[in-house]
Image (cartoon, rainbow, N blue to C red):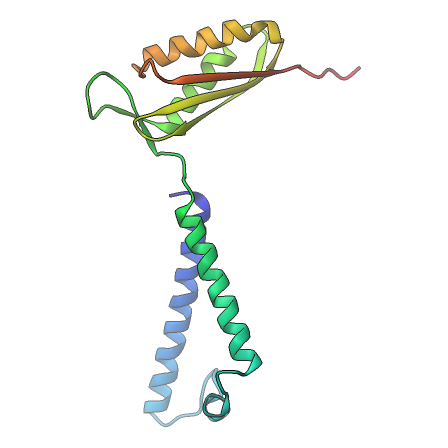
Length: 174
């Protein structure tokens, strides 16, 4: 699960926990016939019974809640990169995507003159591709591709894995 979803889940969980605890405390205070702690009950009840469905505040809250729900749905439907990718000739053999990215970046960085290599693995679990971006001389591109292919072979990745290599020139400050 991506970090954005985890953070959103934590924030939503904390908000629901706080609201639930507040509601429980307020319910206990109502049961004990004590003064409200946070929610002014009389004002709240009067507003609730007199507000109609066409009131601007009701429409605004409905639109905001719908927009937030739609955003959550879109984030959940977005195709996230797989957690693991299939390797080996036997079904059921996998490697973690991040581990594969680190190994491919290290293989690209091992080529002389290539620095700051980053690798991305995208696609489905069974059919994936690798993209490597690094800084270095463009003449080193075949050597980088060969190093990445050799690393993929060591990982027992399928031969159908496409590899894209992109080299940017090293910018020197003069």
